[in-house]
Image 1 (cartoon, rainbow, N blue to C red):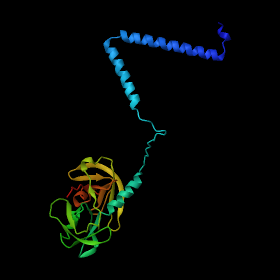
Image 2 (image 1 turned 180 degrees about the vertical axis):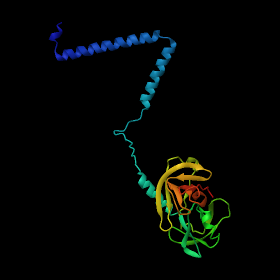
Image 3 (image 1 turned 45 degrees about the vertical axis):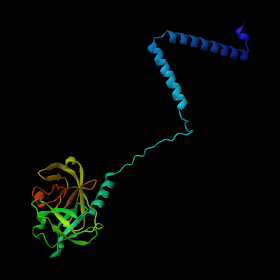
Image 4 (image 1 turned 90 degrees about the horizontal axis):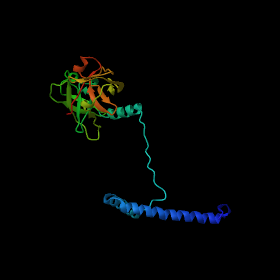
Length: 250
């Protein structure tokens, strides 16, 4: 038989025949090798076959179109974060005045708890005494306050506020403050003024140094996330205008 004279149909049939014979031969050889293999190899092969059949029979139907999960990265600019933190912290900042001279600012301060506890510079209030003091809230409302007894440079105040009259700030965990971390100062003897700098020296002996000075007693130093890290006090001012006392939680 001349292979060159075969038709296309005959060539296809011949190919199928060769494939069939080859498959049978391969199966016979495989079975022979398996039968001659050690029991451990036969056991492993049987486990693989059983596992393959089990997976094939229990595999759920796949949807025609698979859902693709996507992630979206949101980039927050430092300027936007600073502006948001200032706006939030301003709602907790107070201006402290004496009822005898309500037009004169004694000190700034900041409310740090929902019950109206605030912190400020104790030395700035010494001349006015602990009585006859008012706090001017962010809303412009004037409410009475009382100074708690103590010897620390940071004074704790009890401000007579209603739950809806303010938004309390949070005191930062000073163990997590980092050198070079960005901070914002909120101060000013009249309207709020702000300045931005970094932590120049880590907290030590109850003070922290920042590259943003303040001349107003009770000026508040906050992080970019609005947490209070420092208060300008008489004790810190004695070290320099860029030093702040580190407050503790009430």
